[in-house]
Amino acid sequence: MSDVSPAEVIDEAARRRTFAIISHPDAGKTTLTEKFLLYGGALGAEAGTVKAREGRRSATSDWMELEQQRGISITSTVLQFPYRDHVVNLLDTPGHRDFSEDTYRVLAAADAAVMVLDAAKGIEPQTLKLFEVCRDREIPILSFINKWDRPGLQPLELLDDIEEQLGLTPTPLSWPVGADTEFRGVLDQRSGDFVRFTRTARGSTMAPEEIVDPERALTEEGSLYEDAVDEVGLLEAVGSSYDEETFLAGVTTPVFFGSALTNFGVRLLLDAVVDLTPAPTPKPAQGGEPRPLDAPFSGFVFKVQANMDKAHRDRTAFFRVCSGRFERGMVVTHEASGKPLATKYVHTAFGTDRETLDQAWPGDIVGLVNANDVRIGDTIWIDEQVAYPPIPSFAPQHFAIARTTDTSRFKQFRSGVSQLDEEGVVQVLRDRDLGDQAPILAAVGPMQFEVATHRLENEFGAPVELSMTSYSVARQTDEASRAALRMMQGVDVLDRADGSMLALFESPYWLDRLVAERPELTLEPLIAGAS
Image 1 (tube, rainbow, N blue to C red):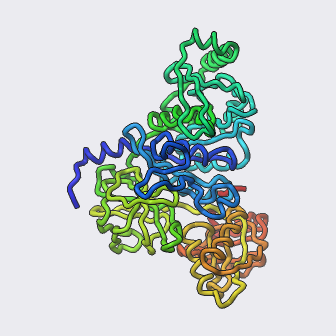
Image 2: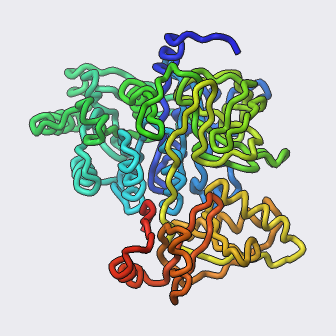
Image 3: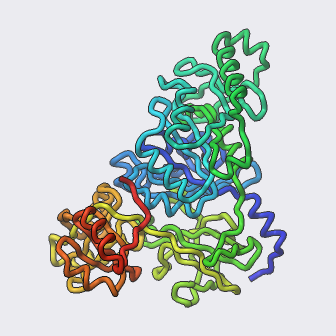
């Protein structure tokens, strides 16, 4: 491999911005994602078309068939595009709280997040759950109040909602002039300008922006402009101003108002992503010692996805580059097995579309095709050994026994269940005596079962039936406690593919009593999932 200087690695890392988008379903996350691509030049003249040598392709990030049927994001998607001499890695996350575990894994690869809120609804229960995932990952959050061109709550009411429910202090960096059909533009707190927007046909092209001086704005916009100025003055009086230190610490959230559908405010938000969110920094390895950005290449896998390309039935492991330069064709070491791993087939993703990638730098996301032994949380490296901390699993709260209804398709059923387990679609628990005959699927939320059933039947041709169990809570245990627990009524101990054991309980009260009365038993809590 060619030599690369430490300065080149540092410079390239400084150009990267890697962030995730989170939101409640229907808040407009997928629309905003597409408009980011439009402003980044990744779309053609109109939103919905992608520049490519092969011609025009769909730009949607919701590529899975079930997602298109349900109109929600179920899987996370990786999108990369250039903007202002930077390279933006956008991680689009599932919008439903049942998939908060997938969101957690994606956020392990992100340096910041954009939280999209519906102007008419503010903080919703599912938004709160996704925010809690962000807080667990300790990443800074930008907030975008979307659909401001429709009837909604008052702006100050929305700020109060953010502060009261999330415990974040909102610091608006844009403030709306007008609302609903009278939404004229925003006061840009960073520049001090009034930015007036002009609608385009169906929001398919970038919204023309006009910088209007205060005197003309007061004449042309009247009370709408005057009211906005007064509200900004009130915010300044109570000290609601942007502070970099508190933003990066996750104490405050810069807030932007706009409409993704009409492109109002999209540029200001994307500029803030580049200007305010952090570039990649050294990631701590196990033991706590950060690996320098200019150390030899290393990365960790945060997502595995099968059958993105139905024509080839492939399996892609997505990893984030943490240090050094990655070059296609290099032979890396798979930390979990200690074996060499070839990297001939790698790509950068754009939804379902992808393009062969020759090199990548810290912060970039790389798809490694058909690395069948690689699992979520695995580390890969060259030259200097490193292991990054594993990505924890959430505590499942729903449990169902899975069986194929066609015994002639058992091989496909077993293969499909293993694949879903590797991807983290569901956690798969097995009884040592039954093996793959009747595995228990464990999930944070019931929609995960719907996805698992759909994929088993449509991708693997294995018709399946699920039987819900009476288990409601799980704890991690060990071999020393297994025998005693299995003797108890209402408790079972099952194995996960990663070698850990979960004790399942029908009653949380019985679990609490057992913890109190039998302290010698190992019953460790997992990360709390969505409730």
